[in-house]
Amino acid sequence: MSNNKLTVVDREGSTHDLEWEPDQTLMEALRDNDLPVLASCGGTASCATCHVFLEKDVFDTLGERSEDELELLAEAEGYRECGSRLSCQLGFNRDLNGVTVTLAPEE
View: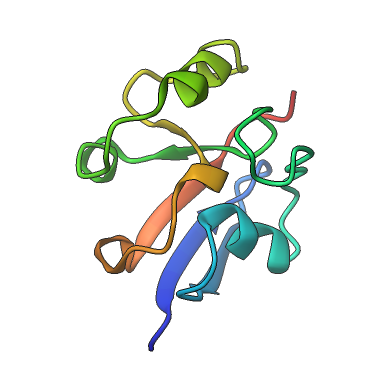
């Protein structure tokens, strides 16, 4: 299986090109590449410390956010109705190859 390429814009505006492996969530790809994603709940969608922004055209291709995810995001700093996701809730997806992800402000 091949990996996806991923570009991440960190909180200082620097970009990082990463590989996203098929067995990882987006949060794991970010964390495993030493990006400052706290992910304090370990990926159980019970915090918002892995909050990221996606471009609207990419966001629109993803499935609906769960009620729990939406509730956490709505209370998060910088929440965007069309763009905010918890990276722990995004599994590897070939359709996301080449996507750019921006880390949300730290809470």
